[in-house]
Length: 247
Ligand SMILES: O=C1C[C@@](O)(C(=O)O)C[C@@H](O)[C@@H]1O
Image (cartoon, rainbow, N blue to C red; front, top):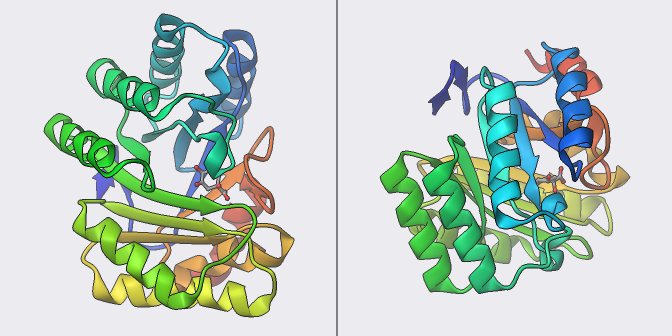
């Protein structure tokens, strides 16, 4: 998958930095900080669940502002709901209509769709993204637990069958065995399905998945420049530097 010269799924996992601020002013600080750290990240994720206090029009305008300012980088649009560890309070219907509007009105490259929404919402959004030529991440997060390996494999398979280009699972491990399960599932899903895979074990215990996930087949690793977007995230500079070990 090649977007703006970034080959996702080849070589080392690509470093994604999340923009998590909530207003034009604070987003401008994140943009400035990112632009002064070029070379340590490959992709920008807009965590638009931070924009809940904005009107619909302001939300779309701010997304377009980031897309313009960061135009040399592939852009992932993510609205992470409360249920999946984000700040987003929109109902399922509001979520669907927001993501539809983003697909219509913003030049994002990839859209992150939460997989455990109502089936028809996911299917409609996947179809719309395909029509618009936007890549699809299907994602699932649990900030409290890690499911059994078989359940992770079943989720990857369902995501694959429903049309995800990148299938992403992120869980909170209780012990090292959970971390190994996440990495095993990444490995097996990468072998089995003809698409890109991401597996993250969150928290300090799971950091190895952010640094060494590529060995098992993870294509993206999420880090930060200004603020962590999830527990266990590593600064993008440290990620980029350490990924060199695996070259
Ligand atoms: O899904 C992910 C991964 C993540 O939760 C992490 O653990 O780094 C951070 C989120 O911003 C992103 O959407």
